[in-house]
Length: 182
Image (cartoon, rainbow, N blue to C red; front, side):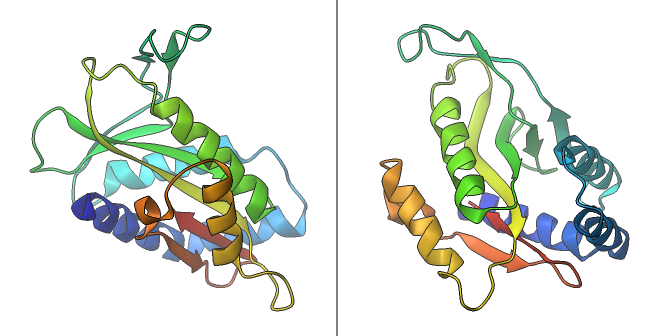
C-alpha cells in the first residue's frame, strides 16, 4: 500500500509541477470555467502515456459490481487504472479524480466514489488498492484547516482515519488550487 501511495504521490507532484498545467489552471480560475474534470483527465492520461516510468494505464475500464453488495447498479468505471512497470501483471490501482471548488464537497465526492469502488467484484480484475485525487481551491488562512475538513468528512462517511494516515495535501504552485491524494 505504501508503494502505491508513494508512486501516485510522485506522479501527481510531477504532473502538477508542470508549468503548462499551472498556466491552464490559472486561466480556468480567472475565467471561472466549469466542467473541466474531463480536460484534466485527458491531461493526466497524456502525462501517464509519456511518463518515464512507463506505467500501464487505462481510462474508465468497466468493472462489475458484486451483486451481494449492490442491487441497482451493475458496473463501475474508475477514472483510471494504473500499474507501474515491474509490478505484478494484472494488479492495478484504481484512481478516481474529483474537482470541486469546495474542499468539503470534493472530499465528500471522493468518499462516495470509495464506497462505490468497495462494491467492485474482486474476481474480475485484481485491484490492489484504490485512491482518490481531489482538486479544490486552496483554503485561506482564516478558514478551517483543510486537514480538519478532510478528517471530518472521512469520519462522516464511516471510514477509519487510520486508513488515510498517508493522506497528502499539496498546494499547486502559482495557482489558487490545492490537491489531495487520498
